[in-house]
Length: 128
Image (cartoon, rainbow, N blue to C red):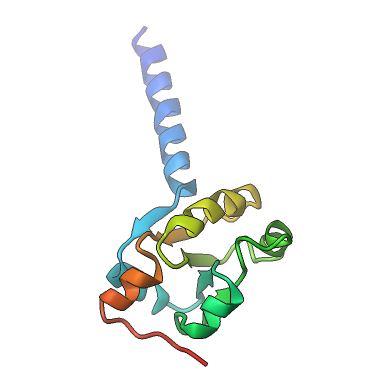
């Protein structure tokens, strides 16, 4: 009986650890800035091209969440890269997260406050 409980505990722990590795963390603007300072971390902006042109995080890649080809564009992303996902306020990027997961992109942190929170924190944006 104790052996069965021990095996069950190990299996449950593995499931929990695996689930944690695949789930996105909601991050603050300051945390997102620290992540983006690391080499290779990509800012993924899911706003419209017009919003993107009006101001974005430095080096950001833009894929419009509402575009008809959003899922196919996501499928072309590097599944092994680490991303910081954001939109204007956090709503679209939260929806986009499911599409990234379905495409096998699991290293994602979510800027839950969006670029509005980023700007409110006094962090820099790039515009055209």
